Amino acid sequence: MSSPVISQPGHPPHADGVPVPRRYWAIAAIILAITMSVLDSTIVNVALPSMARDFRVTDATSIWVINSYQIAILAALLPLASLGEIVGYRRVSQCGLAIFTAASLACALAPTLTFLSIARVIQGLGAAGIMSVNSALVRFTYPHHMLGRAIGINAFAVAVAATIGPTIASAILAIAHWRWLFAVNVPIGLFTIGLAVYAWPDTERSPRRFNFVGVVLHAGAFGLLISGLQSLAQDAAITLGLAQIAGGCALGTILVRHEIERDAPLLPFDLLRIRLFSLSVATSICSFMAQTVALVSLPFEIQRVGHTAAETGLLMTPWPLGVALAAPLAGRLADRYPAGILGSVGLLAMASGLTSLVFFPHAGSYADLIWRMALCGLGFGFFQSPNNRTLISAAPRARTGAAGGMLATARLLGQTLGAAGVAILFRAFPGKGSNIALGVAAGIALAAAAVSVTRLAGNAGGRATLPRTE
Image 1 (cartoon, helix red, strand yellow):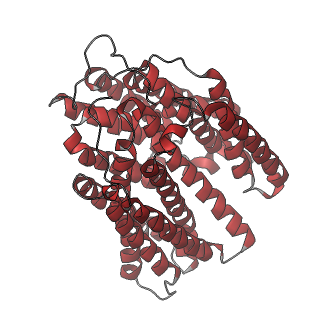
Image 2: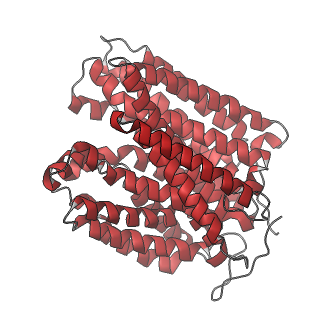
């Protein structure tokens, strides 16, 4: 049952998107904000050795610069999505953008690793504010008949930002100190805030109260589960990791009992009861898990067959380029054809590309490797936009925030599971872990395609309509 909605004071919400040219400024601000927040998940990876030297800490300790950001995002995504339904998506995203920008400056000026890690937690909370309502803002910015196109543009930005972080970091580090990885966010963030204040749409609000008990249980469960999974990647922390996972499961059980009967639960059980929505979430988790397993293991595999580190960066470029080409096209097609078909075709292409990489010969040419990488990127890009459109439009308008939060959670959960899985495979199969990981990624992509095609049953092929009224 959907909660009643009330309009925000000020400008009334537009019935079907915002008018041009304001729409173009709005989508520009949305893309800039989500690109910065996603990019900062991977952009610091390359600089970790430099940070460890500057702060005189071990390499293992420096990993918290990454972990603190990811844990903060996953713990805050769904609570902030729920808050967006109560106070307005525009307000949550603008506050998140301001916090992210201020925390980026604090990261750039950090005197110690502890200070930097705390600043990264705050930056992660700001990023969660952006990510949690990103898709909801897209839905209320564009008309219904252009929703697939808009989500395609947004998916393109997310997918490319998630894969080119190390490349951008290398370019910045070639000419500047690692602190500039964070400092560059400040002018871009201030510019984006200005665009957002002018262009982002007002939306309806729900009169329900914020669920503080659910927030505490959710943050504890997700924080412990993700921290535990990341701890399993370190030989010395396996016991701690298992204890954290057990604690997270216990809190998760309490969270389910607390939330499952609510009309608008923090963890959206009401939406997960919608078959189309739950299948799209499962497909998203599997696909991002497969992509992350591949992208983490590919540098090791490419160098294992004889290429240098410099060549590896260039040879991985066709993947994000393939995503960039396919995502906008798939978004347009998603307005006309079922996601069950489009997503399955894309995932089958990705699985085929990954399988071909498993059997890539040592004597293979650059061209042989490039087309395999491009096929993976094209397949993933062709899947992502239709899946995102279906997931968002399957939810009632009053629950768009929860749907968008679940979309972002599925992406980050898949990425986290994928990274942890690669670490476990590397430890279990020394020397051959990267090749085995690619085979596992192909299997996961194939399973995701099988889940995707089941959406063709009982819902017009998985192309949901967007309700105009509640």
